[in-house]
Image (cartoon, rainbow, N blue to C red):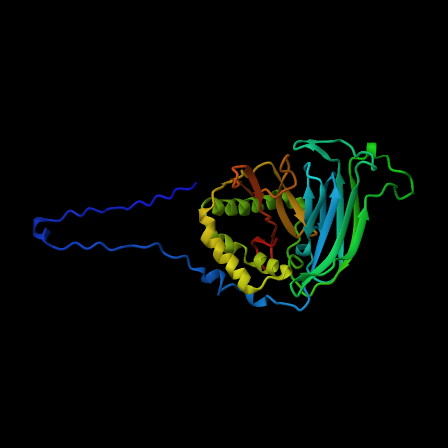
Length: 332
């Protein structure tokens, strides 16, 4: 239970004898309201937000006990380095900038037996396998359209020469595929952004770390308006590929600015990470490298749920350097 205590500061005035009979007045002060104009009326991107008659959503379903990282157009859309298994669904519109052929990168690794123990090799595919499919659906008149299969994948049991794979000696599996998507929107995303050279990774990492540290400090200091300003471009594209309208976006922003200062959490330390290059070297991110947080964004907060269980929430913080700019900005 949170207890909020308000303290009233009393200012005692000492006056001379000649002023003792003068009536004292105390001017009341009130908290300055946060000016939301900058994230509502002045948002430079919001005028581009469009609604469409048909708004398809692409969803990836993965069924396995193995660890994996999946990318669409070289943007991470599904990551699991834990014991979590069964079937998990991932929306992937965030990686689709426009209609046409999309690339799919599938990387599979041995499973985890507990939060910090990963097996060295794959196992008998009759006991442990990997299935992935992508479906396309949409909301029509308040109902979910029947999903249409776009792509199906099962981890092969034979190599390219038709020989049975010895899974007891397999440490990873990687496949590159494509699928076709049709969406009504066209987003710039990272398509025109600066291409970073991995040979400059030390200098690039310093810039990315500085941005993460800035964002982390804004979280610590409970600065919701400043955080929203940093995310204007990302918020527009997220709203567009998720088909949110302006009113819903503005309502979410107002609620966030109102409620965020009251949240109770601590930020995870910015450590044990590596710099990752995504989006054909146009997108950058810091990713945890150690279990049990391996594979997740290095921007994370820790908190207690309503049952006082310890929880951790990871913030996607993928950066780009827009065309004509020398600064990094959040894109996903």
